[in-house]
Length: 534
Image (tube, rainbow, N blue to C red; front, side):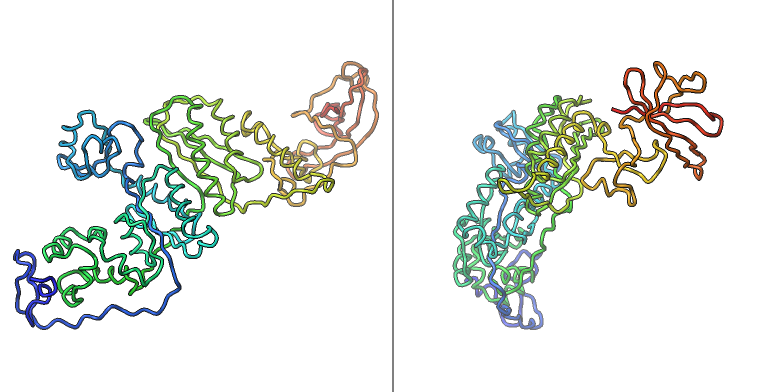
């Protein structure tokens, strides 16, 4: 019986339920409602979709190896192979084979349990990478990406150049893929799964390109594919030639919807992937590493991904956190900071090398996790013509780069800036803070210059009492007064009132000191050393 006749049956009947085991059986039923023809949608803006089918995603997320290695899924004795590396394929293994049978053929077979969470993380990472070609990227779970590239063709130099650039980038990431290109996203996905790399750029040639594809590219349920096989239907073209009324009676309405989407008779909106505001990526190491210096090549891969993420968004960041993940201990956190935000991986590598060079690992590291701080708009680089400008901006950037290296080598707390505070007491007239270009504006109302009276650069943490003779201060001999007094009366509102007269004095050896005399209180009329001039 021909497929068309099989689906029609007799007037006033419909195919029986599959539980009877008779696909062509009939049961009495009222006449079915009429089935709507393929919808005629309004002409939509021309689109061109590039589908990226990841053919070995379960295997990519595990460690690479030249030995036979596979990924398995299932439970107990029914676990089967879902992905095989090249060595396993050469050994005669294939997907769908039972794990026990595979281990009989290859006794030293390395196998991993499938981890859908890691696969989705990898898919999200590739989606962020694909946003370098187009802002409209959609994840087609569980193992494909869809890119709308019509608006990017002129920027990328044409379709051939775009495809070449995409495949080269995926090959550099060790991602085996199949590419499909069509005016609709579902058609592009089906072409990719069939391995049909020839692009279909017009709606007029779409039906002819899809017709020879096997039904397996649709990934419909096995029961649906079995029914199609029993009807003698093996390709999309043969299925599409069947009456819509018969298809609607026999199969789920979703089947007709997907066919209409693929051929462009029905809108097929896709959810756009939105990258997170902060970068975060995990990298599994091939073996556990006990040396911090051995982690640098893997850190470089994470920093390169960070740079791509930031540059695609014209962003930069000033803080990073690298987490070294151990098997049985809490992660070791390495925090990095820069005065000026940057998006360049090289700027971070030097700081990370300084920190890891001094790190002592409590346990071997099995994975790395890199997280960025808040992403801020990247500052544009500017320069000056020869003979024009003072190069102040370049000098400031070099000074900040030196501060970054010192903090990475000596520790975050070893280097700090100083900000003036509107306070007369010398010990309270400044505050330590993180050096940034905005440090001078950290405290509103702060003075922008030191007082007109002399102030030493070296201020003691606590004033030291001075020896006295006949009421005059001494320090390695008698002191000679050069300037003063400067009277300071402040702090009464905090219960720490300072009533002092400050002087500049010189020792017999020529050192200049900053001393004061207490005017009232328990230490009245006593002399103290508070600072030393350079």
